[in-house]
Length: 171
Image (cartoon, rainbow, N blue to C red):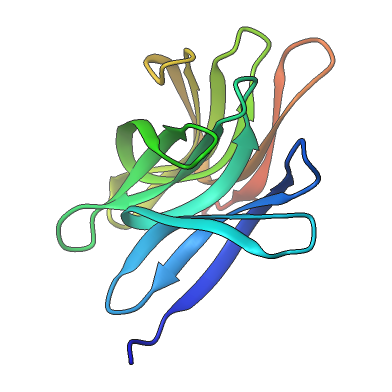
């Protein structure tokens, strides 16, 4: 019998009172995973996606899901990853933007997405990063901030963005 562990990173309440959960599954490798449950927590479906993790999920206006996370390609290569599914978890598109990890996603007023995380220039140095895409995941702009990690992004009342995370500096 195969052993499977699931680590949930993000959860949202769906329109029918159920839940959509995002995280990673682990058997021999780690895969981004979504689980859809009813309001009582009964599993309706579970789907695995790219090797990596799903760190943040939002419900889009069409009832589908937008997910930010990490896709692993090659030895120790993590990529800033965004993917979109329909309401049944079927993959519509996926995009990789840079080396690093996408940690938080929000849906912007124009129907696009704002994604926060960290991007690496080298394996030992990363920048807190903010990426803006259109509704199809096409990159509109990318900003890098001091060394560190952006763990979450929120949209402010004036349409701007606020990041929270961690920063490091030399004395």
